[in-house]
Length: 628
Image (cartoon, rainbow, N blue to C red):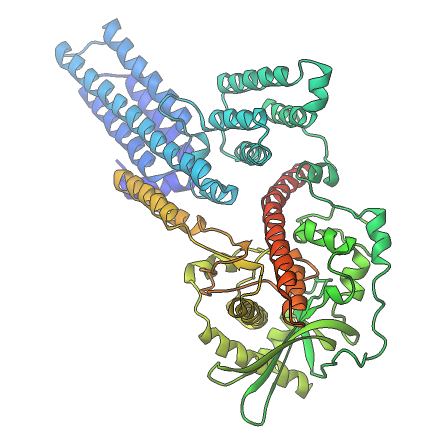
């Protein structure tokens, strides 16, 4: 008999194949039953199934449960038929009863595992309520999609009922949330949906569909809900979806893809590219370079750095100034902020020449990539953040100002990394990059982030938040954003001015509850697969949001804000407006009161947009995968 370690190794490759083989052997042993030894082998094989259940989560527990029940029926039938010939009939009955009891134990063990897993995933769904964490849980424990509660109600049935409640209560946020959860479960590779469960769920949906469309008036009133439920019915029935247009998908989440004619006309009123230095706005004559991905077309930030005679560094961080082109309350700025942030997609959604085709931007193409972008060799309006930094990381002095700059060199991350490693023929470029690298290491020692936060952010392309990188060119950009976001936020806090902070707070109660549930599962079942539940804690780590106060725990900062990416984030435009009111001028009490009101409204507006954007991206990915 194979040992448990080797059995788990094999099962980790293909658990269902090993389980099927074990059941085949068990049935063969029972069918050719000749005595006690055969039943003893059956019980050992059943123990192997228990070991796999304890150590592997990539098994179909629904099928195992059904096959165990059939085995139980087969043993009972053998006892009743009394047609096997044993040397000792009473002893045979005793062995058969032992085997039947062993089968019942495995059945109970399987259902108990399901029950605990159901409690765990249900807590994530109802208490934590974040699709990103739930998707992470399914990735780590695929069997979670098929769990049932003690009443044998499947997870998807429970969520469908919650979805219907949210539709009837006209709770748009919950409708989107539970609807996306359903589509998430349906898209899982190992999700199983038997005919009985499918029919029950469809009956519920047809019933609610009838209630929503009892008359023409109701049909018109409930048009959106009816459409959503019909999409769900089609998905559950397994109908092939038509190729969805991106604007059809986006409409469901109130996301604007293309710009209206009015906005396109308004952007033509933008201040023209600067042809000469304006004496009313300071020109910063530093060697400024930009660093981005090679594919980036909206270049919204740059850096400069040179050593001073006193041994300190003159370090500059620059961002494209949106409000040098448009008034804050103009339609184009309102449109940009209402969009929340640029959305990056896995597949082009249009083939227009010289236009975005894989990004849904917050500004039209002409402005985002040309007039507003820090194009190499061109004069551009900018927000400049200039620091004198000592070799020990002390900020000797700093100033923030609206300015005109000229990017001397556009660099890709790869270009910068090559110079860091091999040098450059251009001495000014090489000195600038090496000075930036030195300041980056100094700043890295100054800021103490949470390791877990960095590990998570480093492995995820989260364009809505600061991108954490630990080496090379991307680390240089990261530290510049970190320093400036912190210093700008500190200015507003120290002066008591309103500010749109980027806030990140860990809910310790949630984390403790989740950890306790993980520990309970580990203690009860053990095994390598259940130990992976501990990794779930790493995934269940909150994202940041915008608020008028609060720290950023992940970055280890009391105050932090987004202020360098106005071409692709609405929050950064709000911060530029705050600087215009509070840093460039001496605000009156009335101006501060108006600003505080605006910042609160903007925080709510931008936060409300984040979840629909995330859901839209997932929906678009599903549609794209089906097209492939």
